Length: 297
Image 1: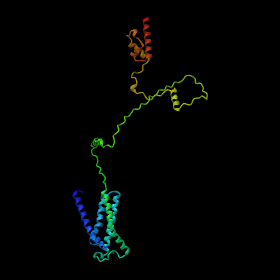
Image 2: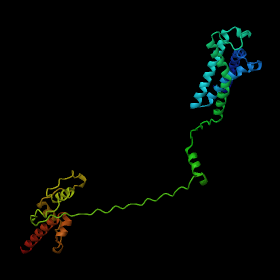
Image 3: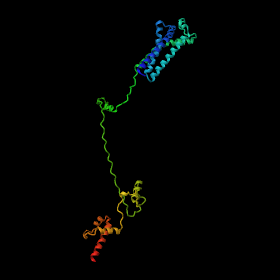
């Protein structure tokens, strides 16, 4: 609702409350005359009852929690009391012409006593409850309105630019973390003894080793071949096919055909043919034997 609509709504509410007060004011004034109030007191009596209702309504809009509940109870109590007195004013025609006996609001004595007690106690209650409500309103501290933070960078800059005098105490310096060096693992070699073990007497038998040491010794003494952990990739395999001894000998003859005898060594053959040292020695001996046989012939 815009501002103009709110102003019109409040204006209409004030007008309705003013007319209702004028209607109630006539009945409460006659009741006050009936219980012995003079002309001035009877004129002010409606302000005591209906005026406290308006004050309690304002306090209800301002206060919160238990104080708001108290203001609602005061508003409800005085609204009910004003309704009862207006109802009695409508039931007793003598009150309109001021012909009723002084202090007489009903023919039945208990009802009359209750109505007189109600009418006379309302001014005293207005003094007490009205003062309490005003004190609660004056001491009320409204909750702060939390506005959303739209820019986190501004908030961070504001906090970082605070003066050190605003701080309650000096900020302690951060303690540097000291790295803890773990001890290097100790390699333990388990060597299987080849000597026969002599039986140890029962009285001098050592305490059985812990389970972890027994497992370690058993793992070290195990002679079972270890299985391959996985298939060798094709990239790691040699691209040269496996050659037979005759193929190696033929290839060695071709490579070393023009070599002198001094150069015909196992290492040279191994590098030229790309074979193992054992095969290179066999090829060397074979080639030297062939050359010696040709020289003798």
